[in-house]
Structure formats: structure tokens, C-alpha cells
Amino acid sequence: MRKSQYYPTWQEASSAARSLGICDTPTYKSLRHRDPKLPPCLYMTYKDFPGMREFVHGEGYGYYRTWQEASAAAQNLGITTYKQYRDMRSRDPRLYGLPDVQYPDFPGYKVFLGTATYETWKEAAAACLSIGITSFADYPRLRTLDLRLPSCLSRAYPDYPGPADFFSGLPFYASWQESAMAARQIGIRSRRAYAKKRAGDIRLPLCLPRAYRDRFPGYPQFFSYPDSTELSKQLTR
Image (cartoon, rainbow, N blue to C red):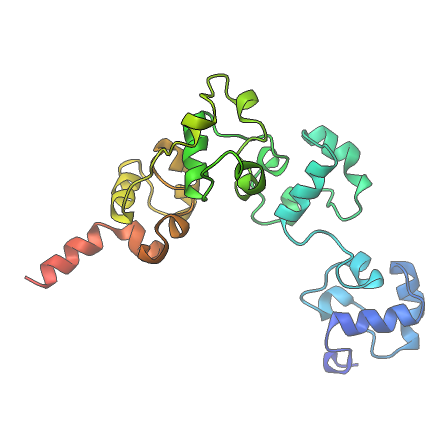
């Protein structure tokens, strides 16, 4: 049977399979012949096939689609170490056994489990400012936008100065051009390098588009500055 004669989407195939009482891989193999539109190999037929668990239970039942969702679920279970993850992740059937393999953008287990934090309170303060956290009241609600922000500032930083000084405003560079030149000085030439090395200058914002809003020209121009500016000056002479 040609591929075009099977159900066009895995969701349609899922609905048909469940109507036959198929609940796992063995029953799929034994019962799928009752519906000729069910393919022999689901993985090869549907490029976006989500796995048998979601297939037999319906869309939305399977594993967490992003590491951020899985991270929140793992932390809700109180998991803080890799060993605990191995021992406890079965309490939530939507958690992968190897999230570092399943998620291409997996950030590492410390970030995933919420145990990685900025080394100094000043770095944390700069990160807060760059994502719009300007008061102690905002912190619990918005800190999840950056998983390197600790749940308890005073516990994470022995020299924590208190909310008044922490949220007083540790300003990042006023213009994206200043940030671009500062980033270049510490060897940042790409988005990946920015994410890894940004902490080398606490005045570099965590999120450039958010920090400079409608003024931000885009990452290609940001990382080519000041070359692009110098070139434009030469062309207009």
C-alpha cells in the first residue's frame, strides 16, 4: 500500500487506532490490519510522530514538548539533582528518561533543575532589570523567565544588600550600539557566544530585543557593529 493511502496525519491514525481498542505497541501490531489505512510503521509514515504513548492516548498526553515545560514539572516534584531525577521522574509519566538527549536545546541539568544561579547578586540584579523585574513584588512572578535567578536571593547571595539596593537599578548600556561594542570587547560574535559569555559584563542585558525594544536592529547587525557602521560611513564619503 502506498504511503498516500494511509491516514494523512498521525492524529487521524490515532483516532482510528483507539477506536479499535489499540492501547500499546503489541496491540497495534496485532490489530492494525483491521484498518488498511493504518501504516505498518508509524515512525516512517509520520515525520512528526510523537511516540506511541501520545498516539494511543490522544494528542497532548505524551511527553512534554519543551525542556522548559519538563523543567517546571521536575521542579514541582522537588527534584534538585540528576540522581533524584533518575529515581523520581517516573512519578510524572510525561518526563523523558533522558531529557538531555530528547531536547536539542537542553541547557544542562543545573539549569533544568533550577539549581544554576548567577555567581553574584549584581549579575542577578542586571538579569532582573533586563527582563523587566523592577521590584521585590515582581520577582516571584517573573523570575521564571530566567531559570538562573534563585528562588531566594538572600540564601543564594551571602552579601545580598536587600531589596532596596538590589532593585534600585543596575543599568545596562543605554544603547544597543554600546552593548554591541562591549560584547565585542569580551569576544562575543554570535548569539551562542552571547548566551555563554554575557555574564562577563553585567551591563549587557539578558534579552537584547526586550532591553532595546523597537530600537534593536536584529542580531546580524548587532554582531557586525561597528563594522557595518564604518562601512556605511565609507560609502557615503
